[in-house]
Amino acid sequence: MAKKQLILNAFAMQSPSHLNPGLHRYPTDQGHAYKSLQNWIELAQKLEAAKFHAIFFADVLGGYDVYKGPANLEPTIPAGAQFPINDPLYSIPAMAAATQSIGFGVTASTTYDAPYALARRFSTVDHLSNGRVGWNIVTSYLDSAARNFGLNTQVEHDERYRIADEYLDVTYKLWEGSWRDGAVNNRDGVAGYADPAAVRQIHHRGKYFTVPGPHLCEPSPQRTPFLLQAGTSTAGKSFAAKHAEAIFLHGQKPELVRPSVDSVRQQAKEFGRDPTSIKVVAGLLVIVAETDEAAHAKFAELVKYGDKEGALALFGGWSGYDLSKWADDQDFRFVEQPAVRSMVNHWASTVPGTEGKKWDKKTIAEYLVLGGNGAKVIGSAKTVADELERWVEVGDVDGFNLSYASVPDTFDDIIRYLIPELQRRAIFHKDYAVPGGTFRENMYEAQGHTRLPESHPGAQYFWREGEETPEYARTV
Ligand SMILES: Cc1cc2nc3c(=O)[nH]c(=O)nc-3n(C[C@H](O)[C@H](O)[C@H](O)COP(=O)(O)O)c2cc1C
Image (cartoon, rainbow, N blue to C red; front, side, top):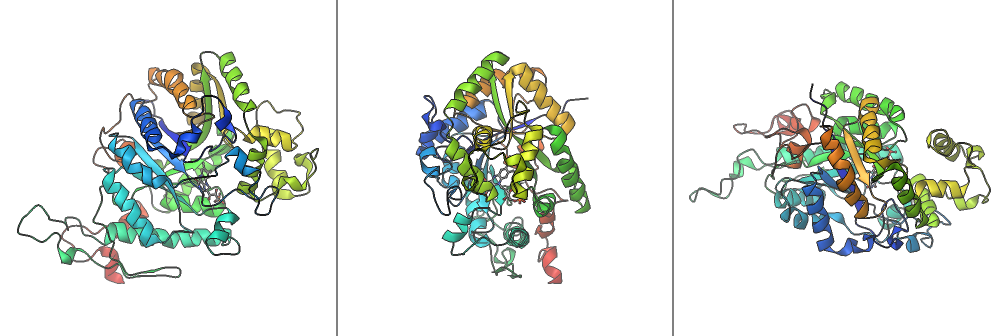
């Protein structure tokens, strides 16, 4: 039987550092070039030559200001820790113009953006990239974002997911149910640009949104962009099982992510979806070199540049807990705060090489400073490839989101050492399944699979040729 082909994405952010606070100080790091379009074009071309499926851009809408806070960015700014940060969407058409097949995942929030406007922006970029854009749907987690969007504090966690669920219905109606297939006929000199009978209002009136439509953009190649999501809570996983085509997760070991993978696939089945059509992609930091020793030495060298205050600032934003409130010698495995205690005990029992270590601030910072909360795989091409194969077998994952310790060096090493080894083992493609195809065609490895799968909930809004109104609208 042919082996499962891995999905490999590069995990990036348009900021001096993403999951590597302080590494802009590393001599060859180009994190500071995040403002340069040429920088992104060159990275996209390099990753496409190596056949990466996509570059996936994380994004946030506020600073990490919980640590030594409240509302304090002093530890964050020197580390360049996801601050300052540019909007990733604007660079996508330029990268698309310089490449043919690589996909672009872009994070956008359902909490701070109107669905009507977001749908238009993604349709625009889907047109300009020939169907190569994906949307990483997030509900956001930073209080600093909430405050800047006119709220005193964040909308309650599960309520954010309820809003997101209706939000997705609005966007599906705009993308799939506002313009009939074949509505545009601008090739016939006699006909009008499009048939007015084939463009309709969506008349969305829900608990959170009122959007009459119609969608401002004509149908783009994928219509709905390829949908990605990363939620770890019960509400987040259920949302992913319903809507996501690819799911991102972080975990230390494949044994530990397996229950989450099984549960999302099982829930997807309950939503009537094909569970194998959901691509599960694990976040990893891979440091690879000629030998295991050389890779470990490289990691040790990179860690020296990590900014520990920046790492604790990232932790503050992710968790909402300000570790500066505790003494420097506090061992957080025994702290009275239950959420922090449980998180740290989880790391203490799973992070390799930390056995018997005291989990004080310094240990937490050293653990998070490169690759964040994702697993780190360090070694020769053989060691790393063996571990990736183990993740697939034990964790039932479909691929990896590879973060960087130093950009682009980490990707250069992966391209030089790891990808040839994966190709030798016949677990990574030598070319795109659909060269010049859409993001969705290349993720599903199926030519012509440009639209949402028929079993996806968004497919109920398709407005097919020959239908006077889309089926969903007939009962409204
Ligand atoms: C691998 C991974 C990547 C993520 N990327 C982002 C991101 O770029 N922006 C963001 O706001 N949230 C991001 N998140 C956060 C989640 O989308 C989600 O909002 C967060 O985990 C809270 O939801 P939950 O309680 O369901 O986990 C990411 C989470 C994971 C695990």
